[in-house]
Image (tube, rainbow, N blue to C red; front, side, top):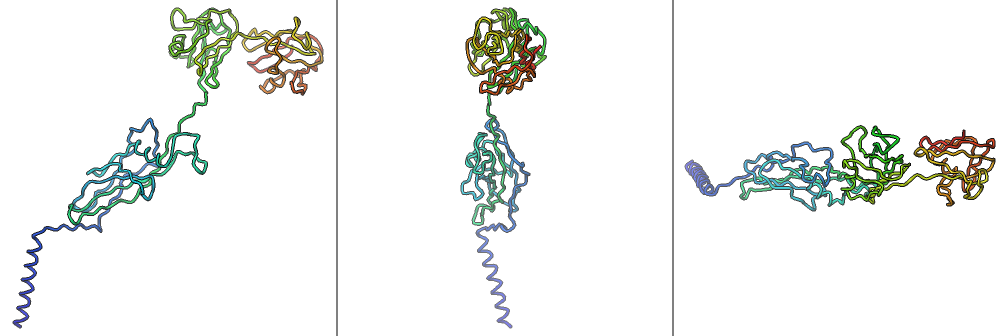
Length: 379
């Protein structure tokens, strides 16, 4: 019995001795099994990126604080690849959130070879401007001693899309011209529309010795573009146009008549081309197949409307834009292709030249080529 009591005393003494010895060095053991870290914010379905917005904040990433008592700085990491073989450190912080800039997402997009060029495609032939990048957050738990260990969140996939550039296809907005110098219009909106193709604006107008101006918006007097506007932009302007004395208009000083006004944004020029007549040549018309003194001239008395009195017989003929110059620009085929409605007294002769074939009653008619309404009529 005495031996048993002695053994108990020895064991108790040993316990207190060991306890006192071990407490000379303090030990903190983190409960790693209960430590988790995860993103708390909801991510956008897609993050839109552009060079113009690169300094903007794309989002603020938020995560929870792990359960251990002591934590060091958090590190927000990203990668263009889900295996994180390459890592971009977005930032280090002692807070549980960090901003991500558009520029940082664009850097990841470059690693995926994404771009803003609408003409490039990926291996599947799809637009080469979308992809997925990956984020995770890493924290250190423990007190910095032997018990310190890193924990990492699950990887969050983020959808990104670079906004593609708009290719300038040479189109531009119409302008509207009006003024006393546009004699058929005067200072009345909407004026005449100058339409644009391949960054070249054209309008045909009857010009008189007066002033006029271009406007970008119908009814808005503040949207005017005058002589000084183009002169200051480096345009070379036809010598028959001058800066009006008041300084806010064009002044036409040439011979009154119908002109095509051309504003070429590519060459930065403004030109005037005087109206041209059309000439009827062929077996069905006076003068026959030659340019002669009795060749019938169609005069443009109204912009884009030519007319003449002409004697027709049952044969073929064609119209020409320049006296003495043979071409096929104004054959019947040309007008058909342009969508003109043509008088039933004419038919296409079916030749390579696409001549007019007059099949009506021979006689003298007023023939009108109306490019405004797209009609060719006989009266």
